[in-house]
Image (tube, rainbow, N blue to C red; front, side, top):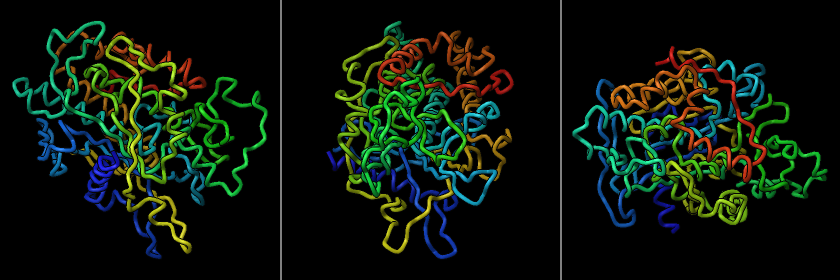
Length: 447
């Protein structure tokens, strides 16, 4: 299967190569290039190892979004994200290592600032935006159901309490792959963290003193020998506290809830929206760690063959490797005489969107300036969702538009089955998951 892993990696790398130069790591005055992790969501239609041809992506009415097809084969990259180490805004002398919003800053976000801009999270949010745009296209063009290669309207007989009542579904012949140039932070990368230590000897600890035992996720990479637990995003020890969970934990939960976010989950059935395979470079893959973090023999084993209502199920992805190395990875740029620094550019790509971000907002804007909201922020996604809901006109979606806050939306009846899945998984396999609440987005003002 490494041939397929190589093709997925090649597809993402080709999209990165074609990005605008301002979205890529810049050279320093000494001519040295910074390293950057990237993640991409790639989809296939039909038999990925046989089918050839380009995938057309239609434009959306009343927009000037550029629509491009990536390709020449049956793999299409629909979302890409890169990340960077954030400059601490109060002390510009060093890199803080944080790539997420501190807990104390969450109430200031107002739906306009991303809480987490690790590459994996950016890629999944970008993919969700692309799917919302596909829903908008089909809602505006009800007679062109075949125009989207990725989603289709559902027939009446497909709607039920068991399968959910969403008006769209991802097509049955579509498979979703996720590529990461580095192992996801958290449990899937802990063995790699140990190997990178000058002294990999586990730190002496009292198990009863661990934060995770008191219901809190263990911070970042601390106590790296404690495995199989929920961890918060890694950062420098002197950084402000964050409740943002590691990418390993978020991907583990996505195996139960699907790759769809809250908004897309009310429009698209989760049944066909699970990641089929995760692709990692060979040096970034540790089988023991990935089996423990994601597999049926690891911390999620009690959910083997589990099916919930609403089209949700436990759908563990296969982890494939690739021998391809990303040109801007730390491994590619490292040499005995040069230790590359992390890039200060965070990029967003879909076939209709390219953005560069700093501190979770558009580059050039202050962090909590409402004008700096990325197309991936909750405020902008809600506006797009409102367009789709108004075009479709279903009573259930109209009820969503009458909600006043994003917190009400996440607790709404339309998302009840999804919430049940999240609560069960967090209370069992992912104990220690503390919700990162407090971002009070006013839905009425942002329609």
